[in-house]
Amino acid sequence: MEERPTDHLRQGARGERPLEAVAPREGNLQLIIDTIPVLVWSAKTDGNATFFNRYYLEFVGLSQEEMTGWGWAAAIHPDDMAALAASWAAIRASEAPGEAEARLRRHDGAYHWFLLRAVPLRDEAGRVVGWHGVNTDIEDRRQAEAGLRRAYDSVADAQRLSKTGSFISDLRSDQHQWSEETFRIFDFEPVAPITLERMRAAVHPDDQALFDAAISRGLRGGDADFAFRILTPAGATKHVRGRANIVEQPDGRTMAVGALQDVTASKLAEEALERARFELAHVARVSTLSTLTASIAHEVNQPLSGIITNASTCLRMLDADPPNLEGARETARRSIRDGRRASDVVTRLRAMFANRAFTREPLDLNEAAREVLAMAAGDLQMARVIVQPEFAKDLPTIVGDRVQLQQVILNLLRNAVDAMAAVEGRTRLLTIRTERDGADSVRLQVRDAGVGLTPEGRDKLFMPFQTTKSGGMGIGLSVSRSIIERHEGRLWADANDGPGTTFSFCVPVAAAAQ
Image (cartoon, rainbow, N blue to C red; front, side, top):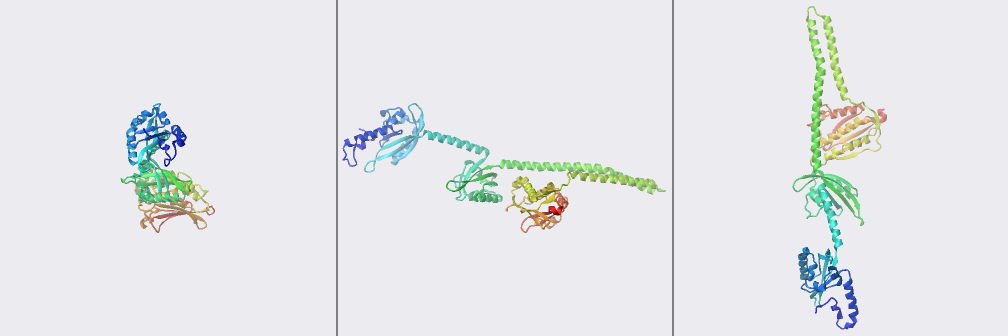
């Protein structure tokens, strides 16, 4: 006769309790086992089932006889049977508690996922003499996991399509969680742990200062925007940009939560567009110069030809015998007239380039410089230049033309960027500083870390049409000096103690200017 789960209760701890003392309790236990909302079972050591509670039998719609032995396998989903049989064999071989998951067919034909747990039953000697187990319905959990997986896959697909990865970092403990796309952007294998040192090693050497600055801001508890290049193990260069927000956790820790995007394609497109703009500007300059040259040749050639003709006629009249003095006077007057015509052409050409009137107004030099920095922010970032503004507080108001002074500041910034274009191995630092220059003027300085100036180059620096740039016209600094001198100030350049050059200009404060 096969043992039922309650048969072992018929004996006391030492066999001294009579059957009548445990019979009522046995009935209660059997009732509990039959009615609890879990599937209870027992089996022999060879895996053959010996008992199923009533809840189990009602769930699958089979009888005790149909389920005994290996009959229970009829309720298992066919796709899960092989794996479940292997797990059941491994659990029995281990003689330790174990669990597996499989789908069971309900009496109406619907399948539910169940977690199957098995516990060995041992005798007094510790030998396994049977197995007890419960099956717990986990269909809701499985459905939730499937929904979560679909949501995760959707997010992963969106990140992959947009080339945007996400991350969560504990900067102080150097622990990081990356999305799949973040690993893909860095071209890292997820086997090795992610560390700040490993990340920094992947950053382009010229951009490691930018990476360090972003990490430093995060360690100080500040949100950080960042943009830098990375070098993948395959040797490819990628441009990334992103943002990290600092979030305080319930346990007091601060985590950097953020996202980064691979913007290499857009960067290459921007560079191609910039090259196209440069070529277009070059063509426009050439076209303008060609038109201007033709205009000058046409407008000036006529009076010059008249002057030459009149001069020749005048000479012949004076060489005549007797000299024709009245005719010579008339041709001389015509030469003067044609000379004035040529002078008028030059005057009109000057007026053509003076396209706006000089306007004086009170202005804050700090504010004007900040506007220029905001306007040039994109170019500065593209050139990987770090700007360090040092604006003096309570700077006196000056009087001048805002647009023209901003043109000077912008020209000095662009010259500084061009001077650092070939710099490698050190930070491309640009410092813009304002300060008082004595009692009656203020000074603005633009300091770069570029290639510097040669003595020969400094002597010709402010001469028109003198340039070291392959695409330059050599008029920027000349025009800038003219603007500053028109403001009753001065513009000059000094070589730095270290690398680079400092351009400075000073202009009178409002009271002195008035």
